Length: 154
Image 1 (cartoon, rainbow, N blue to C red):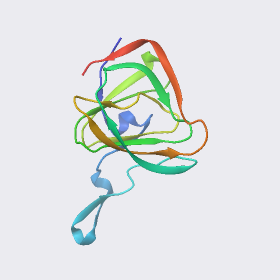
Image 2 (image 1 turned 135 degrees about the vertical axis):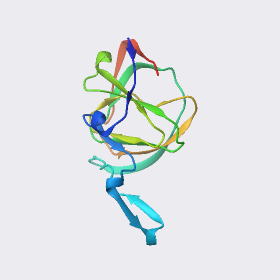
Image 3 (image 1 turned 90 degrees about the vertical axis):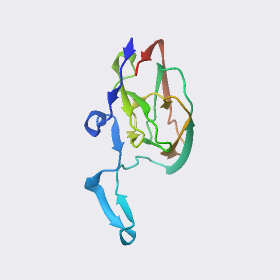
């Protein structure tokens, strides 16, 4: 099975979460006009403490052999290296339900709570990501492994 990435747009990704991208509709000039703030691009969903982390993503085989979800909170990824990357999501934990999105280096996204997704997929070289997610007690990770992985072609 081959999975071909779609272009990441707010509308296409809406069933799975929110696109995080500088949106001119949210622009506000601050700091005496020396800074443009793109306000409230996403809202973290959590029942505990919300934390910021940096993940260092390294290239891995372009196959989807599992999915995970976080039932107790959302998880946002914002690339810091400016390079394209991939996001794989599904409405159900089934390899045939997977959709892949090719994310531009200036686009982040937030997986909504309880959304099935593949762990971080970088393209070509290591890249750092600012990650906003939940830190607290309780079972916040579910994983499903596939017997037949799905190949991603870019």
